[in-house]
Length: 98
Image (cartoon, one colour):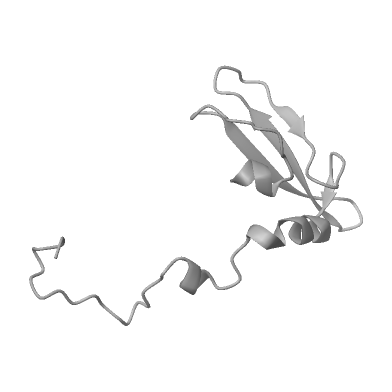
């Protein structure tokens, strides 16, 4: 999952309403960074998360390198996308289970 992609190896089972927030920030010289936060469902407090191999701010190029193994290279193939010009044709359009 997302937590493992960010470098967390300890067994962490978040509650269904917990949130991981990734923020893209730009510094004064124009460099981009990603920073992460974790919010538990029963709190309004954001907790800073370190991203694998980075401190609080992770340079964007490093973030891409660390997460490349879990980001699909071919989205259409990975998500089984049907092009807009191609439609599914069913023998019986009302029988979706056949």
